[in-house]
Length: 311
Image (cartoon, rainbow, N blue to C red; front, side):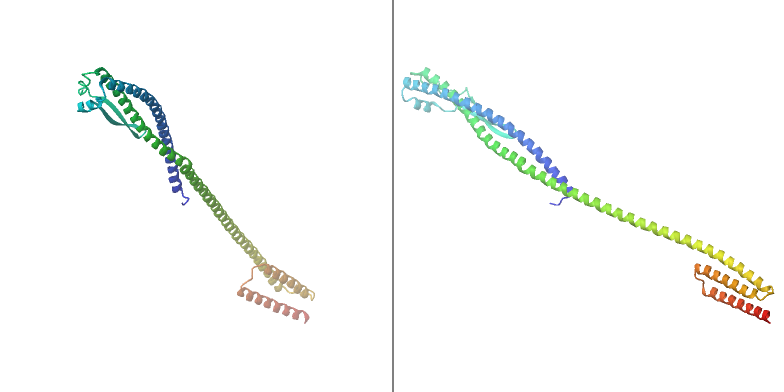
């Protein structure tokens, strides 16, 4: 059986039906047991009554035989044409169980014994007729009770077996199945919760990594802009220094000591410019060629000035 929610709902429906069935069968068993005990008491009373009535009937038959002789049985058989004592059968519903009941009645229109015992013993014959009529009525009642007793005994056994089977087999088995399905569903829910938690954690890690990358990119872009601004300032300073050098080259140099001083100052300035440029981003090939040309021109000017001073 697969532990799914559909199966759980089906098993819960079965459990509810089993509990309702157990309750109904328990009530039915109680009702049948109550009727069974009532019938048992009535059977006991009917048997006691039957014993007393049959005792009286036996004495009355002995009196008839003593008064009329031994041929009374033959006279009765010859005089009877129709049954005066009749029995009707019907059914009684007790908690869904149909119990047969017998009812006796006497047809007063039929009286075949009115001439019996006319010669002698007529009074004893009439008394025996009434006593045996009462005995037969008691016998019919006892037969009805005995039949109901047997039927109820079988039905109560079957009902009790069903009640015990539902109570001790079906309901515990269904409850165990429901508990198993609930445990499996709880385990699946825990697994799903753990999976969702891990997915959420991975998403958070990915989002944090993306944010760090964006921050790094922003920092790199801001650093490049700062370096570009510094490069522009350094370029402006270098241009200003170049202009000053050109002006200084244009003015005459009166003494010899000024030439090496200017050369040293130029060398220092070049070194400073080289250091500043080294911190910059590497220049392109065209910028390198222009810088080399400028340095070459400056060197020729210096050489010409030195020659003029020596000579």
